Structure formats: structure tokens, C-alpha cells
Length: 180
Image 1: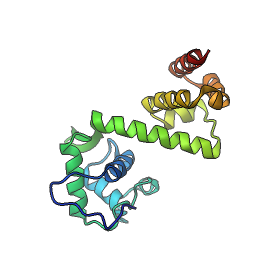
Image 2: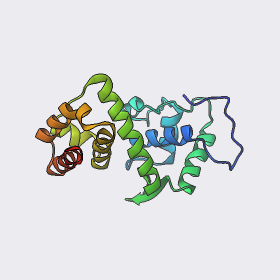
Image 3: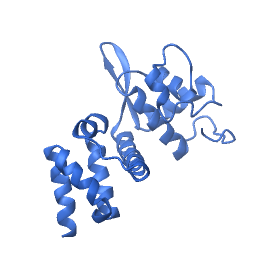
């Protein structure tokens, strides 16, 4: 939950922590819902319109202390600052990441997945890697592994190389070549 003592004047920017919470919340509604649904996720709403799988999002309830209008204002700020964008599909306005927001979310997600792997030692299958983790995030994870030291991640990278897509194998081979 975001610090409830943190105040913000109308029209002022958001903190990095608030932007990151909105970015994480976007993972729940990305491409299938709009501003109101994202606001409900961030508010921790129990409305029937909030899908059950959205409730497991790490930003579900991040802004419990804020009003619905305050959360919408924060989302609008992210739209104005080009972290998010709206695209109409079948007449409905759906929220998507703008390039700036996508870059932020890839970085956040890559660090979060890497931390989770450190803690739990995940060795995902090809289906899990490709189906669960967006391809640009996977690429960033491999880059972070390279930065931390390929040898530290050798076991994971070997399994990923064996199970991964052709593109992933190329990233991993490039990482290995950089330390050879």
C-alpha cells in the first residue's frame, strides 16, 4: 500500500512509487479494460465488475486510502505523461501501455521475476516462459542475468536454452559469448 501521509496537490506529478503501482495494476487490465476498471483494481474494490484474477495483482488495493476520483486523476496524469494510452476497440476505450510506460513496466517486471527466481529457484518450461512472461521482459531478464554474471545464472540459462524459443536461445548464446 502506498504511504497514506503522502499528499499531492491537484495537477502535480506522481511519485515513482505511485507510477510503479499504477504500472503493476495495468498488468491486470491491460488491453481488456479502461480507466474505471484500473481504478477499481488500485482501490481494492470488491465490485462484481472486478475480475477474480485481477485481485491477485500486486497493486490490488495499493490506493485504499484514496477516493475513486483521486485514483482516476492519477491514471489521467499517467495518460498525460504518456505512461499509458487509450485505444478504442469495438467502440470501447481500453488502456494500454504507451512506450514510456512499457519501458518502465518491462524494467519493473524483469527485476521482479529475477527476484522471484532468486527466492524460489524457478526453471520455467517453454510454455510458461513464452505464455506468462512477455518476450521483451524475457529479453531484459537475460540482460540482467548477464549484468549480474552469467556463471551465477548458468543453470537457469542452460535450462532456458534447452526449453526456450529460437529468439531466447539467441539471447542466451549472446550472453555466453560476452563472457567467453
